[in-house]
Length: 113
Image (cartoon, rainbow, N blue to C red; front, side, top):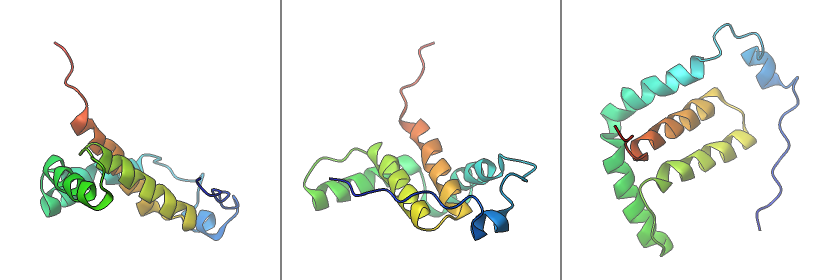
């Protein structure tokens, strides 16, 4: 059974004050950062995400003894980012989470024309 999920931080936490939550002029900043990462730095550093996720899925399948599909890799990484964010709230957790969510688009079926 999954353990108890910690409560969110106090709205007046030090992190909130530091980040001036609620006072951001552009609320898409982290989304823009995620888009830049998955289309720039990360793509350059790690190559095509579909290929990378296929390699990771193969390794996880061997380690866990159950089939893991490439589309499941970004879903699992989103869970990792949520868990880390529950421990310590950092903007890069959200940017990475958004990046993994964006990469899920690679696994959507193509739209019928």
